[in-house]
Length: 375
Image 1 (cartoon, rainbow, N blue to C red):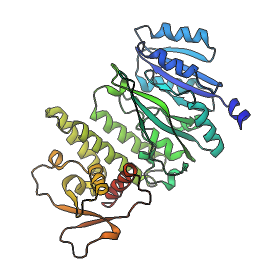
Image 2 (image 1 turned 120 degrees about the vertical axis):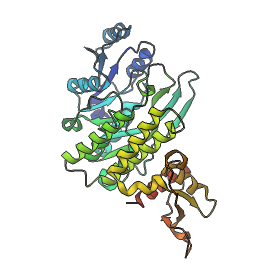
Image 3 (image 1 turned 60 degrees about the horizontal axis):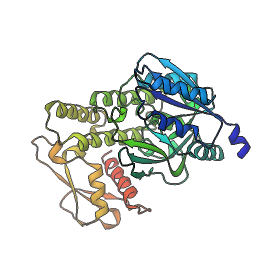
Image 4 (image 1 turned 90 degrees about the vertical axis):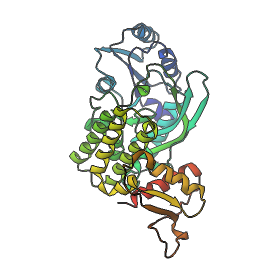
């Protein structure tokens, strides 16, 4: 396995735009990978700062690095350029203001080869860019490997960002990043999870995602219109590939998760434009899945003070004072199926008690069961 792995080349695609402040940190982490067989593609998307000079310095130092310049067209087009130039059997993506732990490529690739998986995914370190304090974000992955057709929540499980994973290059034969300024990866990562034969999980935080960065792509304004376009494109990709019926549940859960996230992040803002965009997103999701309407218009509660159920309700539904528009609110009682009260006066949703009781993961699973109860 060791000899086979060392012969497997991995292309690391790094889109760059005016990233001089953090670029050395990123490129040093790539140079320090314990897996030596790399092709590092530095895609300069029209930088006007010293990014080009820094890239050229690394190209002179290390023959594995290649510098490619393009006029400013956005991160999606830059990533596509990297895919087109990649010659390796495997590819991964890294943002120019993030970094890899030294063992990222070696450890993820080893497990991909051992299990015959098309995608490898690991946990994430969220790092404060000022204090450098780390917070580990675990992937909600049960078992070592997962097959998309056997995992109803696969789209949310793999998370929708492109980085933090290694992919078989052939997955990109069927798709490219759409020309979006935001959420371009949301429209294709779930699709690749759907067509992958298997996904393997490495329970180690091997990617460092830096928060509180000036100019970070991820920290720019949240654009609801782009989110709607991304969700729509994903649905189109699934339909064109005749996969929509197989992955309707996963698509539904992901759309609902994006709606919940948007309301939690922006629902307390009073700007009229923001509220209009949130309503537009809500209408889009409910037009796709009208059976979800009760989740957005009703309140939920438990008959007991079960903390896990309360957490799940919070993750499953939207705050009613942010989304209900002057209608009479009806109520649903949430309980575990082994605790159903006979003759309850309110409609009851009975949820199967999860086998694993890790509080954070179980709450998400129950939340997804609440959503699916309205299918």
